[in-house]
Image (cartoon, rainbow, N blue to C red; front, side):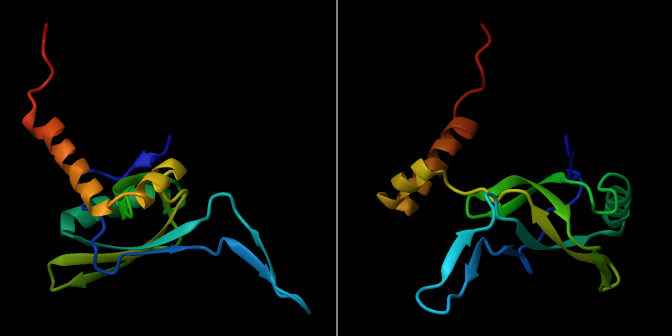
Length: 159
């Protein structure tokens, strides 16, 4: 079971955030005729550029967590990250050492790159529904249902 990103640390900022899937297709040019292509992976490795802004005490915690729990960045850990499905927990690990610089004498800016095991996407069935639907209306309905269930309805009844 991988370790988790500490809840006392901020999530990556959106500034500088980027998702870069590796090439999934291997292409071979032919002397004559169309090129041949084949799939290289069943799960395409994906890299995510991340950046955090942390206060001094948060940076101290991050450095210790990185060293002891993430094993200098080599261990997999769970962290909520943004993607097409919103904020979803991913299994990630660092692909390179982090860079840290002091900003304005108060905050630490930490930049690095994460590799995620699997990029969450809609299932095939969900894709078929989404292609035949108004996505904005569908997501608005999902948001309203979430609001109703988690905010407006009373908690569990005790019998």
